Image 1 (tube, rainbow, N blue to C red):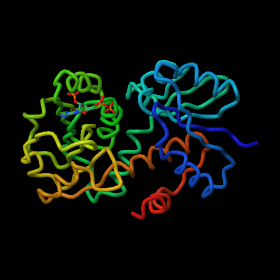
Image 2: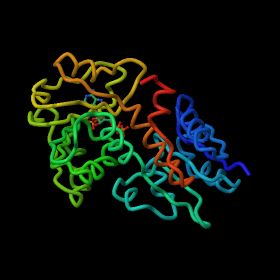
Image 3: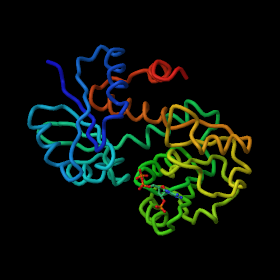
Image 4: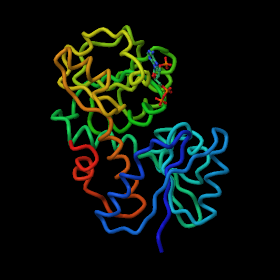
Amino acid sequence: MTDAYAVIGHPVEHSRSPDIHALFARQTGQDISYVRRAAPVDGFEASADAFFAAGGAGLNVTLPFKQAAFEWADALTPRARAAGAVNTLMADAGQILGDNTDGAGLVADLTQRLALPLAGRQVLILGAGGAVRGVVPNLLAAGVARVTIANRTLSKADAIAAACQDSGEVAACSLDTAPFDADLVINAISSGLAGDMPDVDARILARAGAVYDMLYADTATPFLRWAAAQGVTGRDGFGMLVEQAAESFALWRGVRPDTAVVLSALRGS
Ligand code: ATR
């Protein structure tokens, strides 16, 4: 029997997840279907209920439902609890298990594709949206010495730092007091695709060996262009998207796909 999976979001039309999972399934010989599932902004629970009631095997959860999925799941993995958000749901012995594979996806992409070991490094994250809380514990678990979260709204950076305190050394500051000693600067400011980079002091890149943009686009993102103009290169978040998908696929199917092949098939990178 073909097991049914979907990505649920609002909007969800431009999600690349069905393409990614189709390639994973072909590569590993798994018999699955994987579609986009649009839910109304206030309709996550009803849509997820209906999906699993009809025999669905698992869901990926994208914006704006990651918090709702966290509340809705019957049980949570430790990394979902640490993230305070769920991006993967799975029918598991009569219960729905909630997991979060975003942080593992980021660390896998950084480890495999940036020539910059994470152990002992200072990492600066620009932005403090939902995506950030999900990745900080994984960066610290990968050996990062300190994560500093710089955000326009300081209280949001403070809240994430406080929530992640048990995972290691996490500091918060406003964008205009971001430190200049980071080895790696990660962008998570979501205005970054539509418009220009916010006005950030270029000295935050003074010691950076690399940058990473959690956003991705068909062409270089404004943050990557800005960093390149200061002489610092990096990668965008498409690799993270493929890696978090691989983590979900491994949870669901018990087999781990080869992400490098899929990345180059989808993007030629
Ligand atoms: P997500 O959960 O997807 O990360 P989000 O919660 O909307 O999305 O967060 C977007 C991030 O981009 C926030 O850190 C936001 O800063 P605020 O917390 O101060 O709102 C940041 N951001 C968006 N537009 C920005 C801009 N023009 N200048 C600086 N930061 C911006």
